[in-house]
Image 1 (cartoon, helix red, strand yellow):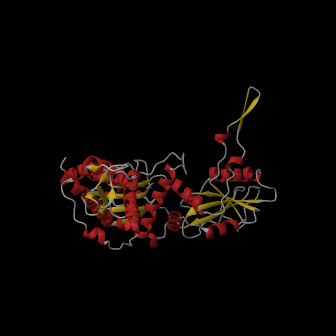
Image 2 (spheres, helix red, strand yellow; image 1 turned 135 degrees about the horizontal axis):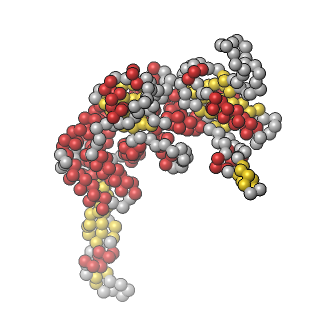
Length: 434
């Protein structure tokens, strides 16, 4: 393999990261540039029968990097900050999945390995700085005494209790900051900062003297990999070994890089549900208490707990007399025709019945949808008798409960999710609607 050619291809792809074009999940494919649509088809993001995009994330193409933000983002958020929070939200979601917080959803973040690798290297550098090698220098009579070395190398003179050594073998530990591994580390971080910096830091970057002054590594990529292997064999600390392994993976990936950068997910509704659940305060867990199905077999009623109801998010007010069942719905909800249909509405109604069975009878249980969006469009969902068209009168002939609709700015939610901030405004709005 031509390493110089592979490296050039890698750098060319990364240079495209500085050219960001913004689009939205669920955009009509016919509105995309033809070359971008072809790239999405080539990567499998767009299926032959799709009329709309089903993807949130980043795709490199001939004109730069296409950023697909969540549906219904305000146009003012079509900027580097919006892309930054999307990248970091995907990172946190993936990290939560692999640590079991959202286990069992059955979907993956595309390109999660490369995303995690880049973020691991950046976050490690921000905490620990450039790699330094710990070295030992052997001396005589200066530093920490090395008794085994002294006994084997020096002549001991007899004394009453033990031999006396006139010269003592000693060692001094010091740290070498300008070593080949540090140069490789600096080159990788400079490359990441240069090409991914806007996405990683939201367009806010400061100069780093340590990186700017560090010389370039010597040798081709194969030589660098060999040097890292040798350095790994001499390392003992977990941080050093983890860092060296990450640098090796990054360089190996730069050699075998595919033609397109692809990081994101086709199933952003799972991310939307996770963000709403994490960002709403005063959440309570009721799933373990909800009724489950039973099947009669041989005169025994057998419960099937794993097939029971599972709510997305349930919150309660401070007094404990109002419980809100919140269903995070990743719908455009720009009109009644792009909002949830019968299955989602019926599911919410059954949630209300189930939750009412496990809370005190005096507790008010309300139902809510939360859609992505920065402005209120739909107010509530209802079930009633058919009419010939819109009416100013609330539908009649039904005792079904109302389901209240709320909208949450996707970029603001991603910012809260990334920074671990609770959305008290949305929570109060939900709990004050009943």
